[in-house]
Length: 259
Ligand code: ADP
Image 1: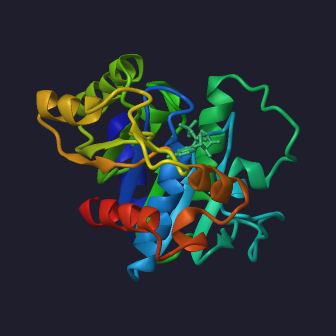
Image 2: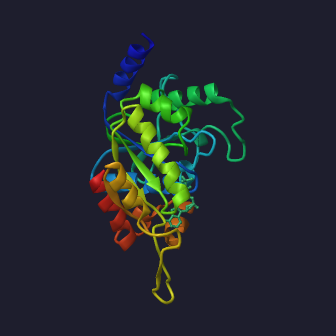
Image 3: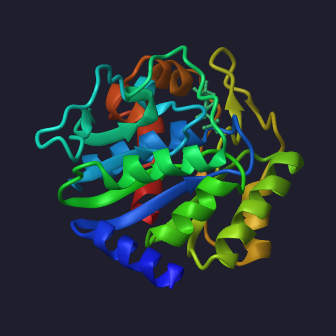
């Protein structure tokens, strides 16, 4: 009975939202949030109506990356209006607490907060709701997979073995709970020296593609390690909007076409 209740809630939640895309990683720090925001902005640039749900309750990054400050308001005292940045709608726990307050919460409270961000936001009509998940295979991933009809998950990894191992765990978890894997993105894939043009595979080469092949999922593409990707996301105008015609923006646009 619990399950059917959850499915019903999920279906209700989907009203007006055509696709829910979860962006996941096995480890923290591999560039999941940066990739998620650039993908969301790339989808919006192609003309889609896009929302971003920052599901990382302990470490929300999207307010900063989307350059949004202020608090959401409510017109009817029931649902929050999402915030807006660079043409996409966004909701994050980061809008509701101040920057320096840690969320000292146990799991159930985190799950409750996540559910509220998701269902108490007036998302309106969306072609895509991109969900920036926390790293790993914990409560948040399970809650989302069970309560929401997720269209598919994108796994972000860096090429070194230790990250790939954890990425594979993430992949298996989604398979277990019946969420389709849209594919793997390898971030920080290589570095091109801006002075001499030398290309260096700092974290190794080809791990993401090899993993995709082994696990029978699609390899969506590789993103280089590049100072401007970090700078721009830190400054609240990610690469796709900061330098829309650059080689890097084209990489994100190409990835978004495959999602
Ligand atoms: P995660 O969400 O996996 O924890 P973040 O997206 O927060 O990772 O990225 C971690 C750090 O790495 C951030 O400072 C971000 O700007 C930087 N970063 C992410 N991807 C790249 C990249 N391709 N090139 C350079 N810096 C990157």
